[in-house]
Image (cartoon, rainbow, N blue to C red; front, side, top):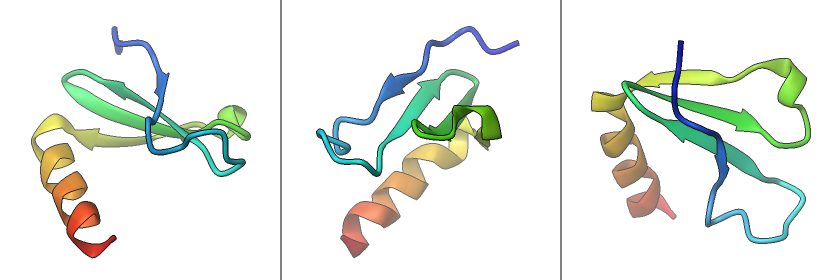
Length: 58
């Protein structure tokens, strides 16, 4: 069971393409418009490197 609450990404602003993240031993990511579709799960040890790569390529 994942104990963290989902929160909207600060990069989503008020745009239609929003994601929510729940951070804990795993990081869960889901689409705010399609929550029923489930989520992606990343080990916490991989989440920071993923964000770092995304920031460098933005």
